[in-house]
Length: 370
Image (cartoon, rainbow, N blue to C red; front, side):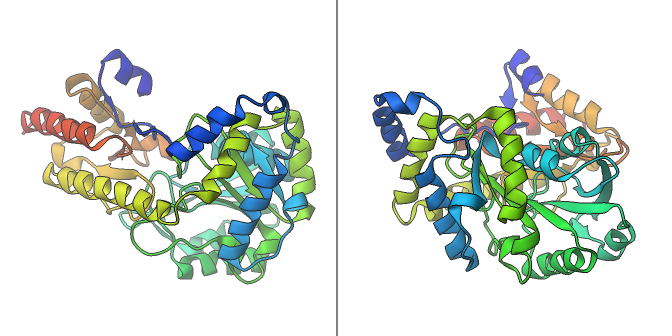
């Protein structure tokens, strides 16, 4: 959809790419770092020690844990590489891995590359709730892990403590590993984000994946990280080493500055995206889309059935060809293409003026379809 949007010279609301620069303090630090010869060479394969220490300190303070950054934090080439390294390290042929759907598209390939079998458990629309009884029915002696994205892409759902505690109980009862992608943890508008690893008895069985891309508007820097007990991390590090050797060293060094930004940075950051969410979602509702308003991340899965389209791909193509606004067909986030066919995913990470332009284009073209 990004390629089609570019061909149409349109507005790309299909991919999470903000228009703003990362914080100036981090950019200034990068300018300093690139003048130092040693930072143009490899870092430690597991990541810069100071950056790992700061990640551990923040996570430990959030979760009241006391893990060791030297052996239980690894810096990766984005959260995607952290996820792939985890799959290749922990899963093997014959394992089954539960994936909640709709899901971020990298989850299935990661499981399949490890020769494990993905097992899909749909969340129930429009609230995107988990049917925990059905989830338990999908578990058998081959089930190795469950993959959770919280906050969730594409729905914008932030799981509550009660929901996470149910995941925790299931993992404990069936001796499952929890692989949790928390890349949007700093982008929560309503309620609070709870780290799964902080719940009772979950540290020992949780692999937490995160990164800097979303929280600092730098999706192209490709610096992520993985946090896990040393029992898991030993093998994850082996795979990471052979996949990429190390994450980009200059960016790692510059990102140390992210831990020393003004104390209200994340408050301002969240308010910025909350304003975009409120404007964009309210405008979509006026355009007769229906959906559960997201309480986190910067996506909305919008039901377009009131416009008398019956196919998500046709609707997405209609929008981009006629209004120049690119979305993602909802079925892209499901295992079976007949699921999600009434949805498209919008991303509202763009500048507010661009979002306003997109809404006007959508209104103009869809009004002509009434």
